Image (tube, rainbow, N blue to C red; front, side, top):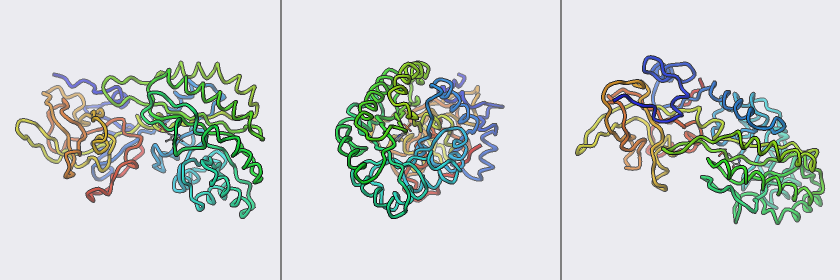
Length: 411
Ligand SMILES: *Cc1c(COP(=O)(O)O)cnc(C)c1O
């Protein structure tokens, strides 16, 4: 039986002589270049193409921002900084990487709950836009602005009164630690004004990892309506309006890629009204996972092959400590397999077998693939986990069991 592509993601990467290529380099060669396994590899061309694809479908007047927490690798952020209109950061550490790209500071925005006074000071000093998430942050900004003699660039992060339905992660609607409740906005707009702060606009983010085109369209429509309501309560003209993102990518069997065309068409239809109501507003969308998730793979090497009571286990040098999401998040969710292949046996015409791919950690949760059909593998083969460009290395407990960290390459 021939090995079929396990997932559409796999077809993004070319295969030459049985070997998957990332950035035009065969994986076996790339492993030598990195010098060790496991590692993460990101494909520059796929990043560029993804940004172009998003821009092709979305209205020209809409700015595209990169949400850096999806993948903060400095070289990757640098590459994206030449392609997008802004970078959204969530810590002083991310702010530093974003500033190092040379992106204009007023195109860098800093959101996230619990920003410390030191972080706020660094953001104001840099001239970045601060998305305030609470009354305390607004008061701190006013004080810092006075101390530094710099006018803080203030945007209010709003916790909307709706959520992005069917999203993998709800980050707005109901009681949330994120943002200022929409109904509390008038009070805080007045407070900012009384402290001498101009409010440049609003940031409304309702959720993440949605593959439901209709739900995204509905959330965006509600976001724009809410923005107009908030603008009517504001004392200053709205200059910045970040309407969130939440575009998901398919990970598991049965999931289909998001269709951007209808989302673009709905925004095309809605934006003229917004531009008329808020003529000074620059409207932006923020995407993390969608821009980088499919452009990255995690590569580990088979170090042992065991049969236990009839079941084949491929033991690799990589696992949960580098790639928590692919392992199943510590068993918190019903586990499904990420798309996995043998990178050096991509068109293997020999036998396949049903195997579980595990890592070197002493926990049964250290799984990269459970009972998956793969070409018959040997020690030394390269296991590739697709859809690994977002929330991979930086979102994994690398300290767990004290194995080496996974290096990253942008090719
Ligand atoms: C995490 C986050 C994003 C990015 O979400 P993705 O699903 O990676 O696109 C965008 N905006 C905010 C406010 C976030 O916290």
